[in-house]
Image (cartoon, rainbow, N blue to C red; front, side, top):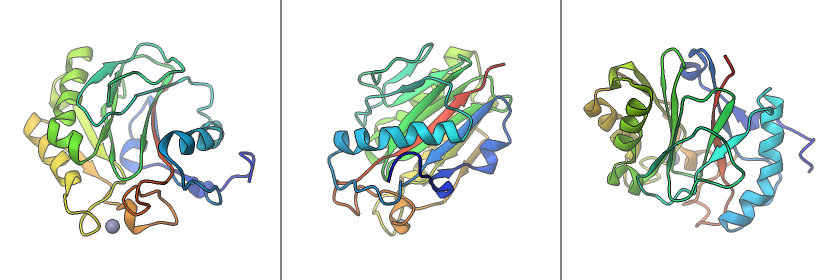
Amino acid sequence: MTPGILRATSIESFPTLDAIPRIAARFLTKVPDVPVTLERKEAMALLAPFHQQFLRECGLGAYPLASAEQVHGTEVAVVTTASNEPIPGVDGLVTTTRGITLGIYVADCAPVWITTRDGRAGALLHAGKKGTALGIVQAGISTLCKSANLAPSDLVLFVGPCIRPPCYEVDFAAEILNLARAAGIVESHDCGICTACHPDRYYSYRSAKGMTGRMLATLTMLPS
Ligand SMILES: [Zn+2]
């Protein structure tokens, strides 16, 4: 299969995020028929052309992608320009810059989108069991608020597909919502989808014992 042959089911979006102006949020799921029983780096290299193709299919191919090293930590970068290399040491990306796409790779960990209702600022976080316990959600909220002069009550938070009970012993999606509320976010949503329950649609690190692909969550700040 080449990147030119696509299945529309590989691109998901969510009504809650679709309703917000000036942004585009997408979740690029499993690429059917591409064997990815591989380590992370190899799997991501194999999937990269498909991810680029999917973004073009969504009309988002023109925007450079800023990504994060993703170390299951709590560092958050404020992104003003996209570079080819992932930003080292961070698990969260925040921006107010138009015309770029933030990207986070996941397979069981949650992608967490945080935006304002008017789409003028946004964040995308990589939040699994460890990062959530360490404080990536609070760090993302506080960095976004500081960088764009916002209050948590200005924000909408959305938890994407991730592993959940009973497939996993820790309900970190529920914890992300609890932390959002505690931080002062009044509007938070969870898609409720478990990655491990749908092997046809999603990669699951735990189900595949670590040898699998990565989904790409994106947040594009559309040009004004
Ligand atoms: Zn499940």
